[in-house]
Length: 341
Image 1 (cartoon, rainbow, N blue to C red):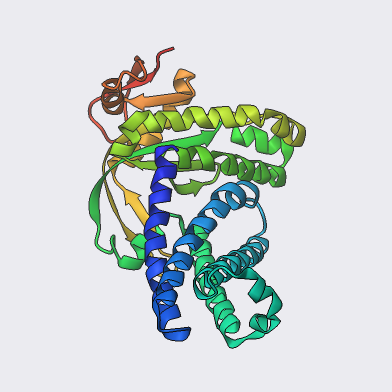
Image 2 (image 1 turned 180 degrees about the horizontal axis):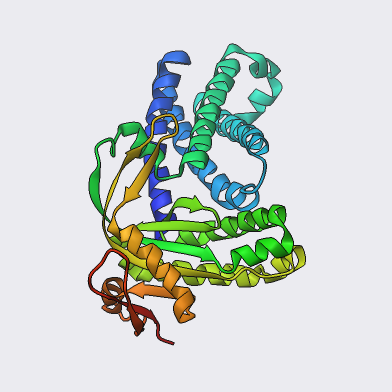
């Protein structure tokens, strides 16, 4: 289990504990005021989040990520209700009927009793809540939603972040060759393919700007195991593996370049009717210039001196200076580095 999956697992564990407590309270007051309700509620509430965690990671994230949102929500609702129903019936039989499943099969009245109707209503309510947060996470971003809810960045603050500006090479030429409609489809395929590498390296997609994507990490997460570099190489691997798909559909395999830099930036909520958490500051402008310099030096990836020095201490990668670049707005030139192979 990698560190990202471990974090998601721990998050599901916290959700499971909260869900178990809520379910126990619900069953105690709406079903039966006895220890059976507390035990069944704790088990039902605890196991449901883990079942949905498995479904999300092994099925939805793998097979449904490119599907129509309405289709995804419909399938999610069906799966959630089925999972909730099976788990609820199992533990109800275990604690209320002492594991006598034959009794519930023989007594068909159970399936249209008020208890089942209440349970299904509760399950549908949970499914609606899960889907509500799924929609918001999809539209806003997995790590942005909670911060917006609690107003964490209502007042601007300084944060230490690493940014990667990643851009498809020769995008104008490609658009002219395959047409703008196909080019937009290509960009969407490319953005789809980078999702898993970003997730695996504990990063987050900050913004899409045309054919460019801005990825960001907390500095400690970017430096740890050289995650920000690993992200770039994982994207390369994914695109290489999908090369036949791109070649068949678009007649080419997209190439890309990226610039990496880190430091203090200012972040806070921006806008009102379409809010987002925005990052601003010199570090972003510098990262954009570093990405532009990739074309000058003919390198797919360039890194600032500060970031290279931090990662070189881990001995995961060796770096070689390719030159100095005059960054607009800065008096001194900045040394740029590539990965030494």
